[in-house]
Length: 160
Ligand SMILES: [Fe+2]
Image (tube, rainbow, N blue to C red; front, top):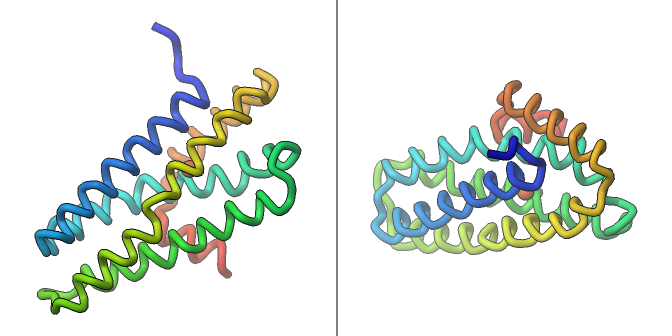
């Protein structure tokens, strides 16, 4: 069996994110706050290293394909994800939800729903990067995973 590849690992993160989003959607519909909390907690650990890798290592290497404006758009999308996750986390800290809490949670989820689709499409450019650079990026991805900065921790690093 072939070893790990950058695109394979990149896609597998997005697959997990899509699963987390689907779990969140059903938990929000059921107003199952404990399940929302548990899913957010897992996503916090998964998405932190993923975002940090993308912003520090991957996105700058894609500048030649997507341009400065494209790069900024990706960062702005991440800003939206930070905001959406923060809003969901503060709602998940409550013991019970009002109807408007449930609507706010669903609206915040809508805002972050499409990001993994946009991001996964970048594989079309990643596969055009030289093989040695893809290997180097894979190593950096794995370093960020070992480092294990959560999304909330990375948000503090990013905005400080
Ligand atoms: Fe991504």
